[in-house]
Length: 261
Image (cartoon, rainbow, N blue to C red; front, side):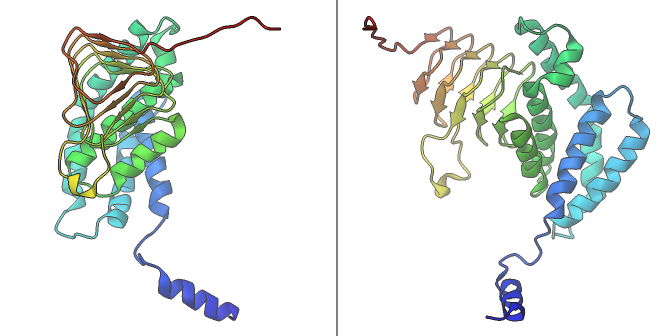
């Protein structure tokens, strides 16, 4: 094939001719700027909000092909949520400070904790998800995923004072419900018991009630699985059934030692 025929072939075979990859980079910049607008004391909030609105309109035009959904209405609805989101994220930051003995001050949490950054981006993306904004919430969550190793679907519902320690390797599915004052360590999966496209509109992921601690590498699966309030789930536990409140669930590995010869 000639170069011209190869070019023509690639163009004709594109499955999604409207796909513009610039939306990925625009969303990442928007997400980062939104985070800084809320927390960086050096940023000019008025200037940033105006720029965020301009950027959102541009992103929305790339993501949404339905002209019956005016972008201005969506942006205004999201903007109204920002004061509430700030309050929620301040509670998340305080939970990090209060629970983690390695934290020295609240400023360190806001600037240096990947778990806090992941939670913040999730709270932003979740509000847009609830407004039925296409593509953008998922791009925001993937931006946080790439930065922190935390994969939270924007559909997941997470209560106040949520703390993620060490961050890396955490997976939280779309229909997961996490209530207040929950603490999660690295490697935890809150996932579906089975992967079936026909289950898309059903609750596939667990519910975690108030004041639960889930330690590293625990795996909890299934939409009917409920972790009762005030429970502790130990490291490496595998759960597919509900746990009553005030439970302590742990894994007992068998460790063998022999003298070195």
